[in-house]
Image (cartoon, rainbow, N blue to C red):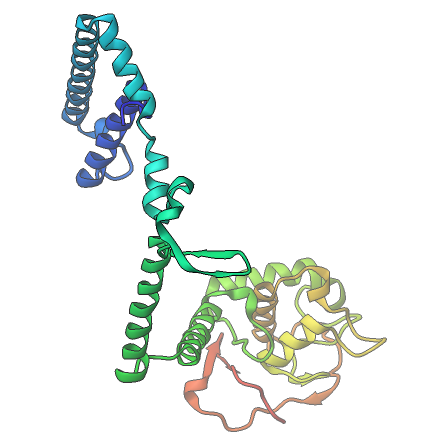
Length: 312
């Protein structure tokens, strides 16, 4: 070991290995242990000093012992070290169980096929143990899946897919920009309505006027709708655009995110019944809500807004 891992490698490895172990057992949080606990730094320093002292003593003893040897003894020791096989050679020999070429006469079989002879080589240990491992694996596999009824790969796949569907649905509940006209609901929080008003003033007022009374675009304060009322239809109209060739553009293509469209659609619903001065004449058809469960409705500024798709 000392031949392949000299002191300048062993000392840092021992030191930092000790530091990592102490850090693991102390678990000091964000800061390293030696910064949070000064006594840890002292302990690491002591360990380092012990290791350095040990290495220094070991080197001194080896140097003194070598100097005490005679020249002939030194030569014999060097020859023995040169003949000693390396650990790689030992590992290869043990893993392959190979017979040296000069000893093959000892394992040759007593039959001859047109001058071709066969050696009685033993199987390499790595292959034998690999074969034993496959047998153990097969027994465990059979017991788990065919005796004790463990989940097969297809069953595990279905289980993971079902969990993935659940995770996706949970993610959609908090991912505001994944909302579309089929899942949108009317927002009632003051912050959302205020944000929707700002978006309306900035983008929609040029056609519908700041109070929603209507200009180039329809009046948004009455109960008549060209493409249907309610949060879902209003959201769809804003995101996908109005009537072909004569309606407004699709705001989703102009960079307005679904969460912003939901806010402005929710604000537009609060304009119904405000009756601003100079409002444009009604366009479209009267929008009437059908009977829907009370739990599926929300009240915004005294006006009942329906969260589900509404039908005339």
